[in-house]
Image 1 (cartoon, chains in turn red, brown):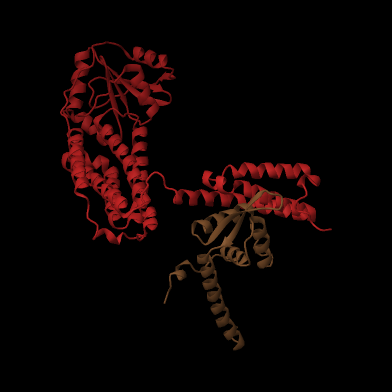
Image 2 (cartoon, rainbow over the protein chains, first blue to last red; image 1 turned 45 degrees about the vertical axis):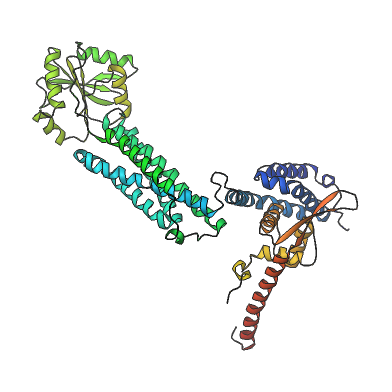
Length: 382
Length: 113
């Protein structure tokens, strides 16, 4: 029997054929728009012809044709999207040497920013450099990768994107796990994280430039035209203004501000009041059996078990006595507190009127709970 | 010495067979699909998506051209034909493959393979 390719395929296996045609015509809509417009109708026609011929041959031929068509579809879809993206980069319409150079020099100017950030941190914040070692190392790596991107744009762009993503992730994690984004240290780190996000875009920009390069016949891996290409003076001026503006923005943020210790509003209470306030926030609160003593407090305390975490409560006779201890801690005049901090990794001290609360964990839910129950009462470190 | 054409070589198997199929004259998509399968002795069976992806790239590179022609029913149909550049590339690839085959045959004749 000879195959009649024009015979309607529904004659032999209507359900299967109908399903395959539906699947294929749906899949055509998943191709890039330009591809669909150019080849969509033709593809459907060819698919139908191929199916019709397979139906005329045998069920096995039909099955093999369907497997082949549907099996090759995912790879074909991915390939066409990648090709379309590369071919039609609409975000950066860089099709001439001049335009490419403009963007290249703007990107290079911006790449000085993390170096600047690093230097500013090192100069103005040497007091807590040790606490932000990891972000500093990452910012340093970012700076190096951006300098690499000046010469090897493709590699530099990829490293910049990866580094910025890593920096962003680490800083975001640090912020979230700290559970306290309001102190100046965390504001600083959050600002750096935002900056990492910005450099992620910059890394992408470098990559885009490197990918655009073949369209204007520039080398892909190395931009050898750097020596011959000189930046337009206008962009140097814009870059300079940008750097000055950034310096004006960064320095006030980075400069440590000597804050005065502010005693919280006068309220009095007891451990029982604290318990009730926490329970009102939905926490499960229990009382520990053993009283506790700390070297920096002058009174013994008791332990509350709040959502399975220990919180120590020290009740003073009046607000003045509690404030005296809190301000000594705040100004670093409490040897007992210094001693205590040698034995613990993290400690949150709160003053609520005549009561001091000590939480030596880092569970964000607890710090948030305390904040919700008593407001911003944590005794910060200036 | 490498020529302007040499930078496009070697061709992928599907590109080579598509160009080879069109070397016999203009064809529509389905005819190319069948011809490629036949030319490759059934080894290369292109799916519709793969075929049109390859045709799209060949059109972008100006290796082939797309022409609209009327069928006997009066309906328009797109057919593909080899461009001059495509013809030169196919010729260069064929020469390259011939050289390789010649070298292998020489060794074969010497009983080294």
